[in-house]
Image (cartoon, rainbow, N blue to C red; front, top):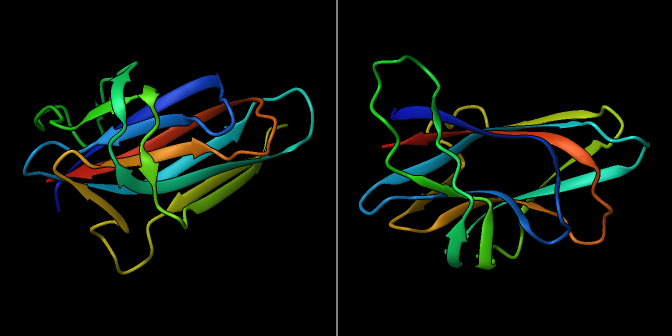
Length: 151
């Protein structure tokens, strides 16, 4: 088991078809998605969907968020990086994992499958794990949080 880190975007209104948050694996390192939490903060009831997916990196990442140490203050700083903007979005899997919630206070949490402590999604050597707002929805404000494991 590696080190775990959390990354969040709070009270954020996503753009359909764009990454909300991307974890970018470091060279010669593995990055796994352990869990994702989404909480609606919208003003009206409406279905919302976030796609979780692995993929190849896009071009010109920006808007980095420094990952927080999830377990204890003595663990090393994360070597993976994050992005919230891209000049060109990463190319993702054909079959992402959808995580649905309601914009008006709805909550959902995705957790890696039981018996798979390593994490279900893994990226290596600069590939990415993306949380992307599904196309076809009208996003409202929400809180997004992801826990990653790195080794």
